[in-house]
Image (cartoon, rainbow, N blue to C red):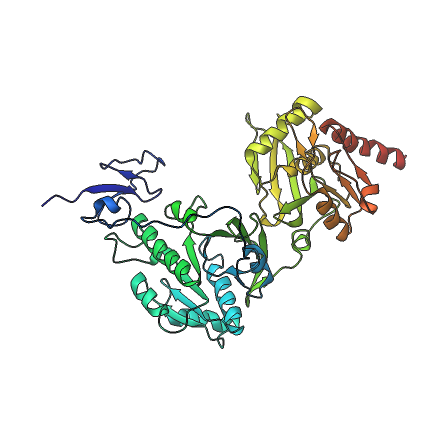
Length: 467
């Protein structure tokens, strides 16, 4: 009898190794290789079977043909529906990740109750909590009377047999995928083999029956969904539930969606009654703004199709250290270093003897380069001690040559700012026709030096008015 072949699977990235090693050659993590057989899961395939069936021919078609819109299940929670692209798609698999205690189970409990109240069959399967714990949460949220079907189970075969009994469910929630295990794999729950095999089984069920499946995934200390990254490629959508412990709001961010736009966000506020929708996130992020303090600039951002106004705060203080500090919260630290270098090289603004602290108010995270102009304005304002105009918004990308480059969706950004009472804007030249009152009070610098000169000139004009 041939000896079963053994491989060592990295529990961080899923790479298969022929022999054990202390460090994974693919991801560089230490002590993550676990011995697993190839009878099932990673490493298995048709070649490992004693008798493989003969393949059958499939029908080939052309690119041209009728297209049907994906049927969706609307939950009625507008922020959740926005993040998913209009609701849960029938026959799709959705992966939701987030830090422990961020509110993933709370959000899904509210969504399950909302769908059940609309007449849909919803099955909530928990592998981490008992049924009594889920009932306590439902009572706290005020949705205990909704006909949501509960189960506490971790075996995939038992879960599939349970939901196959009776009417096909419209939505199946698995909390969480790391707790499931299948008889087809011999490893422990939470390993790469089990996570992948369990995900494949649930996705196969969704595709074959037309039920929407939501998988909850844990997040590692690096902020990534735990388990192999291949799970993110297998599902139709990936959503991250973000938020800071010291803030009361949460952001549901879409990073992948096969049936809708990516980079959409849904904003919620955490309360003792659960998650409450925030229809206008700009007012939330600007709610505690101090308009007369130097070092604060309002940035008009775009998240997917939604414009969001957020305050960027900078503090530039004299340093007694040989190497000044550079601390960033909510933005890319490499991008900050680039802006500081451009200000020193092309504008003559020196930060070599100063500590620089940058913060995006409210715990919000910014990834688009359009924030360059707002960050540069906040840095110059803090260094000079000159407060920026309270009714002005900033957006634009800065190149290494010091030029200010146009960004997309300028009209949407200006429209959102005007709706919230802002009367002026600093934006790149060539952003298109500016309409309305905010367009008349706009300043369009072609180079960053023009903006720095304008901020410094405001001090002289104020001094002349005082005299």
